Length: 86
Image (tube, rainbow, N blue to C red):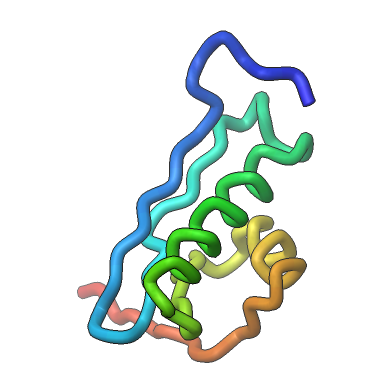
């Protein structure tokens, strides 16, 4: 994989008691589809494993194509959140 000369993306993880939270995983559009998202997920999963965390949550907006990437790593749909804005 070609290493970019600029930041291709980033990932932020946190914990909520015994649950890992993948808060952000962002890859710039020009770097999508070539493995950077997978590298970031693998990094996040390794950090959670170091902490002994086995349950991990990630929120994804409806229609986000990244759902297929998360599913590749074993994430499954757990809930739908509906919002009413007035």
